[in-house]
Image 1: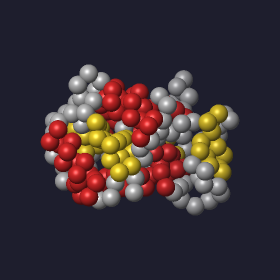
Image 2: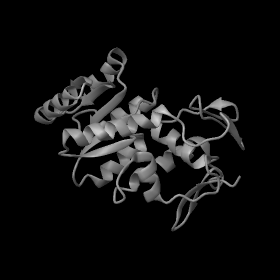
Image 3: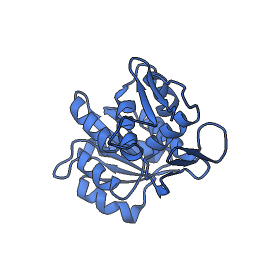
Image 4: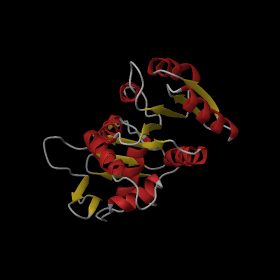
Length: 227
């Protein structure tokens, strides 16, 4: 079972989530601060980071940014209701998904499994390595090169790129992408998609011109190409 590093400062919430995950077979390390979470990254070597958005001292957003400097570890953020601005900031910092507290253990487990599935297998058929302009996409190896240099993509960013590039010129609505990549219900939050698109574009697009790879069709959604 996946190893989960839980960073949550509220003792009752932390203990409840830890117990629920352990009952489902996860190995869990639960800590109360961002500093402790950062320190535990190397020794515990988690498969997923589950962290509270509002932490004392080093916030969840700051911890997310620090982790993303060196790792593309799957990250799910925990947030209280009404933290809309902080949710967007957290997603832009590199979180793959978020859960609104309080959440049942089965909901947290389902969200963890959905995020980890984005790492497991490539989307779509076709050759193992595809050339799209300056991008080389290796679907089997889960690697992306831009002009020959590796591009570090978080799980959601990689899955989005694989999904869109498997059907060039096909337009995907944000709601459809939520269902097919994040495995959220139809009425879930499309900010997940928009934040992921912004992060992906920052890594693969030329900032001096309009998006070449992940294009917006206003009122309809996103598509890959045409180049």
